[in-house]
Amino acid sequence: MRLNDTNNSNNHYFGRGELRLRKRSRLIISLFLLGLGLIGLVLITQGQVDKSAGQIGHPRQTKTTKYQPLSTASLKTNRKLQYASIIYYAINHVHIQRWQEVSDLRSGWQVELSKTNGTTRYLVWPDKNITNKEKQLTPNWFEISGHTVIYHSFEVHTAEEDEDQHDATTLDHIVKQINLDRAAQKVWRMSKNLVVSDR
Image (cartoon, rainbow, N blue to C red; front, side, top):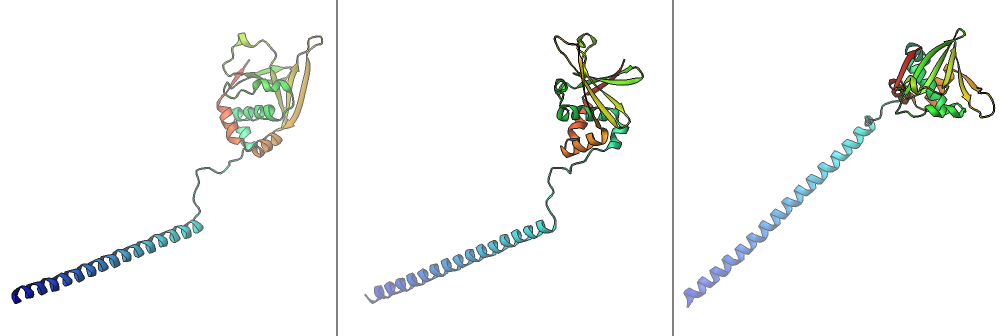
């Protein structure tokens, strides 16, 4: 019996040792994982601080580009841009109702130069592809005299003769208004949808 008692006590002794070893292993693994977690937290926090500091010193670039204003000089060197600017101003800032007939940006415009009594009239037809057969009604037109632009439109009456409505401004004022409207890019696009023809 003594031999059996010795075996039992040895088993009991080895069982306790194994239990202690398991507890120590769990404790070591837990401490190791906790340490890794703390190191990871520190690294993540440090990375966020670095990014924030970098943003203060170097502002993020956005996709929007800085507004590039139109200039009177650019109108002098590009007549289609000049005509598009004049048409833009007429559609948005001239209070003559018939100028709204040319407000369809998708159809574009045909600007036809017509000399009458020594002055050039710039006839503005809606639709850049308009044909001579479709040109029935007197169109809106403008004149350029130095830096002055004079807008004209016939007001059609049933009982009276046609009446010329007009409004005047300057090229400088047109450019200033386009830049106030922040519409320079729109005017550039309009100039690409415009056809110039001479009579």
